[in-house]
Image (cartoon, rainbow, N blue to C red; front, side, top):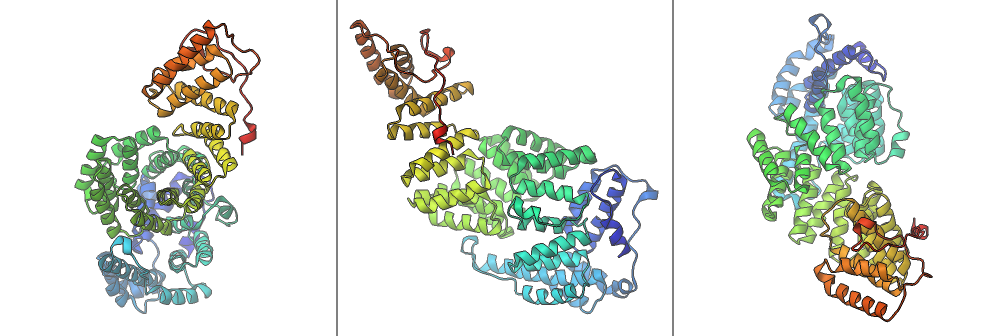
Length: 585
């Protein structure tokens, strides 16, 4: 207990990195002794990022108690069975052990045995998409035994962590959160408890009410939970402060920063960080499925092919490897093959979120909507914060022409990603189908305001104004749209650019603004679908001018295109833009 108290100390600052390194090395060893491989690996990776300690400062081995000595033989034997995944055998030899370490391994072996049987049953009797309600039969017994120990205050930090996991698996979320918070207080250095807590927190409000220990580990937890809650700016600030504190060599932090940039769709930045990470840690498989998503979005076939082959050489039976190969086949439009690899990933780990979502996308491509819906629902079961699954469900119900269902799922996706223009445009389209045009206008305007990724919000807003005979607002939206497209320096292959010029040409023609109308009509002649209309309008304008019709000066026209975009050097009318505040949400 004295060692535990020492490890609980340390406060929330990073002034003594040597002490932090000692704590990390110590908790890595203690985690390994209890079979908690991932927590041990996390602590070891973080310790590796800090400067090596001299021999005199290395942490001493943990002090053995009388109970530890008595259980040592049984523990050593059982741990060897545990490492070979013979969980029932390990638990059998640990029966009756009293020491904290041996008792934890006994309970953890029973828990993992139940999980293994559940997964085997899931894989053997049912395919991933027909997964039924297969339960871990050991959970109820474990809960009863651990709750007795908990009431008697006989559980250490690791024991509390396991009790929390059992409660979470039984869907007792509130109790699980309380136990994980207690575990973090008793043993702040155990990353597993923090991570489990992350998975149960659904929003920032929930986070405010948690009484967390004031330790430097809290900074890592907050950075991680901010990433999960899509609060990317706050997450990046936290990670930057951790790098400044001395963790600049940590591959864990670098990978988390890459994931954060992936989440805000800053693809170039995320790709460069992942490439740097691959140089530092070339045999790393973690997060490589996220890297492959970025390569997929950019259609970088050679790079994705290289990554898939490379991971196959390292370990072809890892979930991430299967997802990368699935993405590779998906990019080549071999959707059946892609779905097969995502199913293989789920056989390896039925709770792997990314594979469920990606498999849903593949079923969508194959027009198998019922299978897609099932896959997305499984993704939501694994993690309710996965906006891609909610968005995918919305798209599926859109195909099935069920707009009320669509609206519900798109709303959920929008709540998780309030500043993602794609969710807002999807919501706007839904409202349009339900004839709720005021709501649709608000969504399109908001999508434009937050930075429209696909540059479609203004066009949709303009078309809505057209429908409602609000010609001035429609013209204003088309002008903003054209300015946006040209200011991005994009090659204008946008289908809607011609639509915008055609509308503006007709609008200015009706307003008797011949110069502006003729400039837009000439622009129409550059596009195949509007060429004839453009020529016809130019002929009409010429005819009217020859008849002596003059340009109107009474009608206020919206601010027109920059001079550089004008087809002629005719001076254009420059009146301040119309006020769109009437449609802002």
